[in-house]
Length: 215
Image (tube, rainbow, N blue to C red):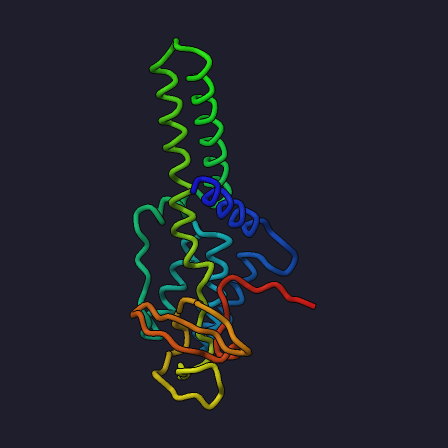
């Protein structure tokens, strides 16, 4: 679990590094343009992507919530831990975890080599565990967002099967965020926050974490 948390922290820290054509500022400005154009789906998508790169940017969170409220979509209320992780930032969270792993390891090694300074060793191990807890909890909070998508088309039908003429179960509003469960030949199996599931055409849905282009 510790290694999984650090791995996800590394992924988020790497994503936070600026790259040509893909940055939090660029995505934020793009989202603002979509919001002004009355396209809540693309606005929410790009605000969400910008938030992954800059989770401690209050302007991104504020504008995202405004667009969701204007589109009559639920507004997220981050927990106290999520607010702390946003303040710290992904890179700092990752290095806190690495340092915690090193402190814990040093305490365990010292415990095997010497019987002296027992309280100091215990304090070092406790400090290491506490430092490791932050990236682990951050990874747990981040994992669902890496498997979410945003509806980018108005009145998107959710079908019972992954075929264009499949029976429609219900309709999703533009801008709603859903969980991505599976993919099959141009369709994505989604789950809403209310627990409803079905198939959506890929053209109507965009993953928050961009997929790598193949070929």
